[in-house]
Amino acid sequence: MKTSNAIDWLLLRRILMTGAFLLFAFLFPGEAEAGWGVEITPYAGYQIGGNFEDNTTGMNLDVNEGGAFGLILDLSDTHQTQYELFYGLQRTQVTGGGTFGEKSLFDLDIHYLHIGGTYMFPEDKVRPFIAGGLGATHFVPHGDGMDQKTYFSLSLGGGAKIPISGHVGLRLEVRGFLTILPDSSDIFCVSSNGAACNVKVHGDVLGQLLLLAGVTFSL
Image (spheres, rainbow, N blue to C red):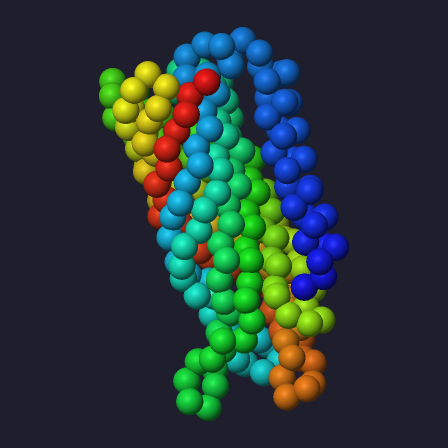
């Protein structure tokens, strides 16, 4: 991984999240003061699934399941709908076939940044909801000569918001992600026995499922 690229992506992510927050507050100032207002939800979760198939070698590369964390920003539109900015990060490993079973090939960070919304069903206390978004998936592999890649993705999920106090609540959600990989795309460059090989896919889709729990702060 190139350190400068990692720093650039981190800076870009912070700028996008701050910019979106300010844009929402500027475009919809009345909404931020009424109803549910602004909601900020840091979350932790467990992310499942994801694999690539190398069209050149036929080898399956699996994304290990594991912990994930992130931040969700919601801004009221009506009493039942919200605009939403979703950011998630999974730090994981990619494994592939080996002579004695699967072996770890390299570490991988998967970033999701989506803009979308939520619809909350009209319940008094526990509020079921559905949520979705469109945006980007950013892959950051860790290894010499391995390039970062960004692709279009979408997400859809549902869950429940459970109030604890006037300004604090619990958010439970299951969300699925689909990342669209273009035809004949070079995804990663993997070092093998001193020789570099490209992992190529052909019109593939990467799917993952996230189970999350977060604490919501209403402003």
